Image (tube, rainbow, N blue to C red; front, side, top):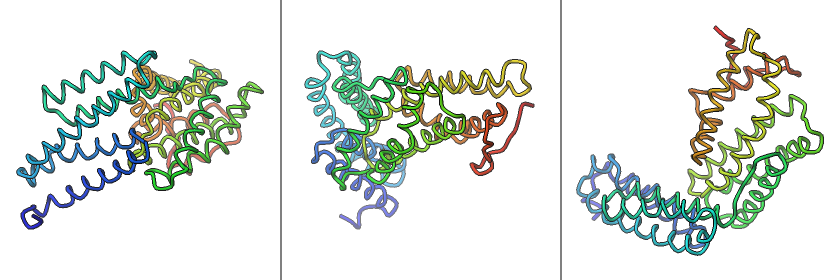
Length: 319
């Protein structure tokens, strides 16, 4: 009863209810991925330290609900795997995640970890159903159109979570990003100013996808294709910047710093940790790739100049 629930637990229980309501909405409209995102969020609260601290009895009771959610998620994704991943290149990868999820549920009672493995299996299975593969500029353009097609279909239902952020992603993709990739394909180059704006736009779009995910939208497969397309243009930008700031340049340390971040991000991408890669590229305040890109642009002598202060950055140079 309401009076028996400790005051500190009520906001946590309300958040669980909200997550599950959002997940039910996604599942009812045929979006299993969105349901998984919401279940992950709910199970994290159910099994997390905050609820155990303020309401240990409630947390103990909700452990059974967390188990049921994990088991239900597992069962749904097993069916999805059988339908879409079996017979594709992702069959075995997804199966391994399902085996790990099974162990977390029935052997270890780690329901939050189980849901994460279920989500991995769904990610691989969905990629088996419709792969996103961007290894060069033409393939990146194909992936952009694939993602745009899926965004358009998702946005047909305004009640689905993450819509406002995804509307802006779709707009930027068509209005700000696509023509730059097409220019790289058709002309083979892009003016430095447009190239930098492309990299900045890609950062903004990555953050918008994170915002949509926070509202309960499944974005990881879009992130996967999108991250590969980012790598392609970063490779082009990196090669050009290295000709402007060679090893004997007094600001070459910035190229070295960029190489470290590049290696870190590509390692994440190769492991298909796309959320970590995009967080590094777009959202990580400590490593601040945006300021590093702007500083390299400045030291390379590209024109027109970009006012780095407008982006909260400053020119530091090599010490």
